[in-house]
Amino acid sequence: MKRLIPLLLALTLAAPALAVMPDERLADPALEARAREISKELRCLVCQNQSIDDSNAPLARDLRVLVRERLTAGDSNEEALDYIHARYGDFVLLRPPVKPETWALWFGPAVVLVLAGAGSAFYLHRRRREVETTAAAPLTADEERRLEAMMAGGDDENNRGHAGNTGDTARL
Image (cartoon, rainbow, N blue to C red):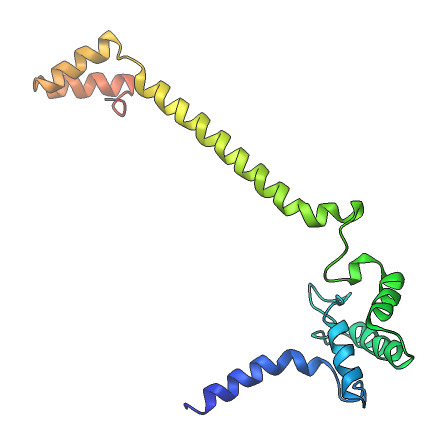
């Protein structure tokens, strides 16, 4: 059992590496390493937030092959990445550039977080003021009379009946 756990862990960690098929790999290990590096920067257009290096989708395979073709043709990493970026747009990049069209992507979560914090602070401040206002309200003369009667151990049946009629038992 102790030997099985490391084997299962190794297989689990190696699963994303199985996305690249042996027939896709380049013979030159340096070019293959560059292709893998570029593939990790490109988003699979079919899968959710998965790089083409990790994806088993047919379109991801086509992009991996395209990257390898560009590298084999003599492109630098930057040129191969620019070629695919020009064909598929910003969406294909896992780290899109910061520009006005992508501001919502880059700054949107921070803006939502700030707005949620401000909304929560406003709600809590308003709620605290309501509690303070309610707690500071003086008792009416009838409420004070009933409270004194209860504190003195007065007629329980009369107090219950009276409180039951007004529905103010929770307040006392």
